[in-house]
Image 1 (spheres, one colour):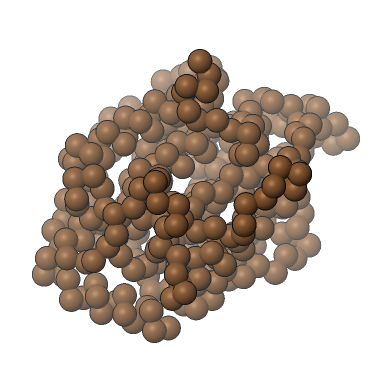
Image 2: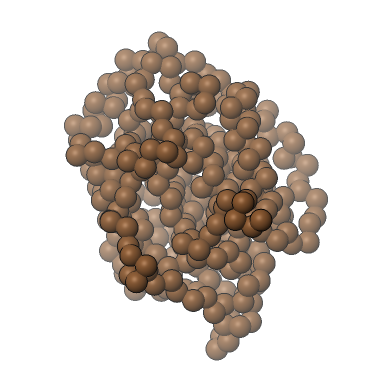
Length: 334
């Protein structure tokens, strides 16, 4: 794929200017982290709080992988929420009469979650640029956002469990089974290295893995009885040129149609243009969830938007409102 070769050559050309750095040392990212922590605790009613693993205070000692680096000479764009033209838009905005918001009939119970984090290792073009002007590879920024998400979910309820799947060149691999220790997942995530994406990505490889490894708990004949747990997949897709394809088999249809399975999507990408497929890709990703209760965000290369999107999905899928009704402006509640 021509764009991959261009991206690869651009990365090689800039190696002499790449400087490893701990992202947490930057004050701009610390501000983002504080906002995420505050949003996480306001977005969900806390369950009974137990002590979080004592390891959580020591995870910063994990060494930084050589792929987690600042991109100091790769040309990139500084994006902000005031630039909607840089965010993927799958279709024209619907009118009020065209919007149909599904009604939730499930119990609003804060039962433990089994969360499957699907991390894309793809080497896409350009970098994230934060307020200080420093630039980071997309994989590194995703690793940092996931780390904050894990700590906040565990602080709310340490009964939540997490599993990890990596997206490779054109298929997926189950990397880490379910664990209640966020440190285990963080260590595995930080060991991830980038890969060269292909023109097509097979999403069946993702959902086939989930369908085989996850057995949903659905109370028989009575959906008003809360299950012992719910399952959620967070798909972090970071490709601007690889079209995702999904052939919904019976097993996948059963998984996606389950009332206690939720799919959230966050897509990082280049500014949409005729040279990439960002709009088409985002539309495909949005159409996977047919129940209408999953959240989907297109954040381009905006680090603030990425962290805010991760904060918005901290809330429990059985307790949050439909995405179109969700309000995050604090003035809305005054």
